[in-house]
Image 1 (tube, one colour):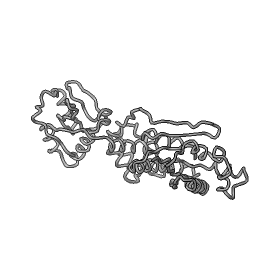
Image 2: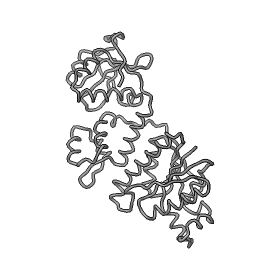
Image 3: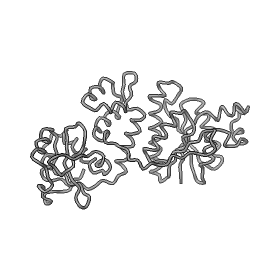
Image 4: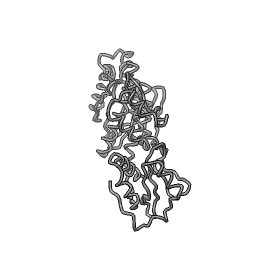
Length: 344
């Protein structure tokens, strides 16, 4: 079974108005060719298959709601179960639309993709209707979550498919500073508080943030990337991880707050894509170092012949890490008998 998530605009209302049928939209839909009735019916006429269900996403406006309700009734009556989802703050007010509405759109799309996939349904996005910015962000979410996106302009005769791309998105920035992203996503944060936390962090993080009325939070793009990052972690099968006795002692001797940070780092190290994106090599070592970036914590590891992660050293003080590299950190110094599996 498939679920088509469709953004909804107001072309149905304007087209019906021009045809003199604005007072009875169901009659208009019944007796108008789908290709001419609206942007949504035009694209759906080329997409729908037997057994499909549709979720219409509409703006927080009377016009958007009316268009979506009309379409949902029409398609339900024609054998395609349809439901509605209103996107909070997606309205004509420019600031609310830009800051909150598009962020709500991203959050709704992500939630729906997860819901439908967990129910065992294939997901498609029909990004034909709505504001142009809606189409852009729906396309971004589709690419990040490996969901095919479809689009058709009223002047086009053929539907355009943007299939899932083989591009490997780089989540290393979010992975390295995941504690910041978790923090800013958890609640509304005053801008001055966010600025304090951002001072030691890379400037690139600001590209994923927006400020409004004294608060700073993830932009629609930041929300999309952060949710895609979380989804990758949930979807990947973790690699078994083994700690050497030296790493175990260092972990156990850390203060509770530091130990918690290191535990989170070790959990993410078990994920192949994050490990690949966020590791680097160094002189005087045949181990890899995780994570990259300006953080105090460093984990030195290698992959054994079975693909398991073998952690040789764990550091939370940068000076200790630099001192160890000056002396040299090599796999041969760490006996296999002194590794034991670590469970989060």
